[in-house]
Image (cartoon, rainbow, N blue to C red):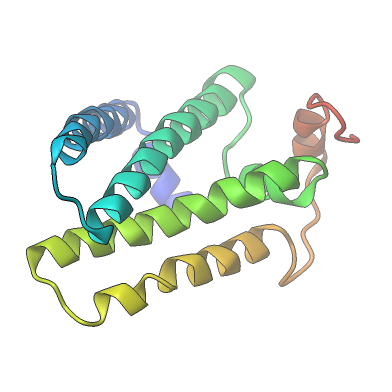
Length: 166
């Protein structure tokens, strides 16, 4: 993670990454209009539509939160930043579904794209992979697989949220 942060936090690369994410959301929303306008929609269109809507929301919310935290608050958005949202009450009750649904939406959206390129019998059963991976990731960041001790600066950061003890 340290190596990748060196790359994606390089100012020009970070600007390009944010612009790419913005373009992806804008173009995705335009494509959603096409799905909505279709007269006949099957279950895969609904999977694609729902997952795209959630991914657009997640990309906007997560990118904004990460940039604000890192650039304005001056706190590194590393493992502890994400884990804090899943370790501390009451934050974990909102962020566990937030991350779980993001992983599920990503897998579902990719499967829908594969399906529209050539339907295969394994696509529908493979939809279970997203929720399973989402549960494992949330469990790992929530400290259910190993103990997570948040450093003091992360505890202080999260203590400003209502109900979170510092």
